[in-house]
Amino acid sequence: MALRIAEVSQRSGFSASTSRYHDQIGLVPTGREPNGYRAYPEDVLDRLRFIDAARRLDLPLVEIGELVQSWESRRGNKVLKNTMFLSAFAALRDPDSRAYYDRKISQGKRHNQGLLALARRRSDVLYAMLRDGTLYQRPADQLAA
Image (cartoon, rainbow, N blue to C red):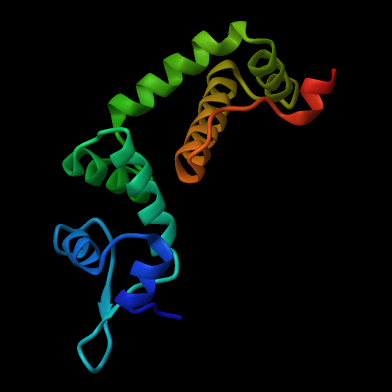
């Protein structure tokens, strides 16, 4: 179901003019209804939450646009991928990360595949933190141990 700009503004907290600007510079996808009104897809709210979180980190809209394009293209940004790979390698000293990596190796993955799986997991956690506006918290089952 397509959303109109008023509903997007109400649910996202962005003004209608900001939503129009995001459409104009290509940050959010829109279509047009037969009457000419903008029609936003349901998943636009997730994207707007991401944009809001990135803006709170003082990222310029140009960089946010590059992140959104990398996120959608599935090819990604090579520099960012390399950074995440190196971050995963450095994280092997952390017991939780090491346990995840070891579990992937025991499943038959090779070293690079295990690191890529760990990098993807770390990327998913970072995305969730940005989307939800939260800080990292260790899983509850590990806190009790």
